[in-house]
Length: 117
Image (cartoon, rainbow, N blue to C red; front, side, top):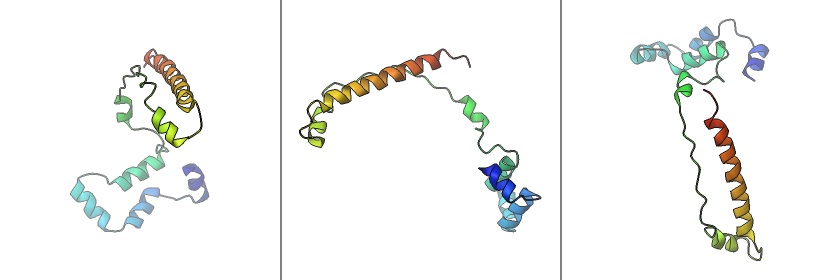
């Protein structure tokens, strides 16, 4: 999408256009902050085609997927009976759906645990 916009209205110098749009107060803010502003950072990332790419910190995130425990089977029975009066077996149906989702999530987690990094 960003590439399509850039092709539709190309700028000779994206950074200069951004500075002009921000005005003179931008240089003062940059001097106080001691580095590039978020606008300059975004302009650089857009110019490099990297707005969609995660930053380096993204790869530092580690997760631990543990098997979840199923809630008690009657945990939602009363709430479902009030929500769906006259629908027999709603709680049982929800339990079956929940169990299937948990099994699929565990399969996916197992694959991720054994995936090389």
